[in-house]
View 1 (cartoon, rainbow, N blue to C red):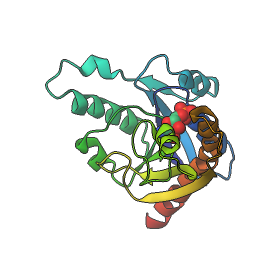
View 2: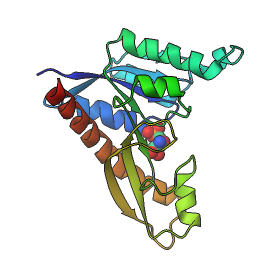
View 3: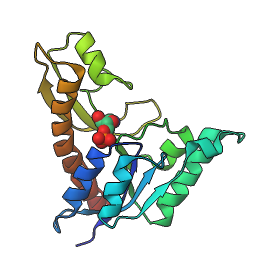
Length: 199
Ligand code: GRF
């Protein structure tokens, strides 16, 4: 069975990355993780990836800050690392960098992201906090293709999570995270299957 090579981009804990790695361990799963890349050398997720024998790389955005076009220069280096491993699909999993239009267009239809809200509700960095502040009764998570505008792009899958009256940001985020770990591997599977149909 041909497995699609995946690059996972992280900045921290990497629990979604872990869910993707574990899904890929199933011989019937149509993807394999060929690279875990972080913009932070101390991202916890890197240790887990290494413990599974997965190749890792760190590209620090700080190394590009003095360049003429820092964001795009960083993105070009990241893209090069991904292409060097022949990856076809990119999974953003808590990658805390805004991607340049150059990167987004280069990987259009090939890069996906997970966000802890039912998009288009509560875009942005504090989606869970914003859902609580707004008094939402239901929230959840979304896997979507990456487009230029942050937290936009065609939706691949969503899961709903009830917001309970005594929920804090932490308790709600933890229940949403459980759903993230289910829908991210399912969505990746769907994307890989569609890829092999279109080839
Ligand atoms: C998740 O809540 C995800 O939805 C968001 O960033 C968080 C990453 O968590 N994009 P983890 O690093 O995968 O544990």
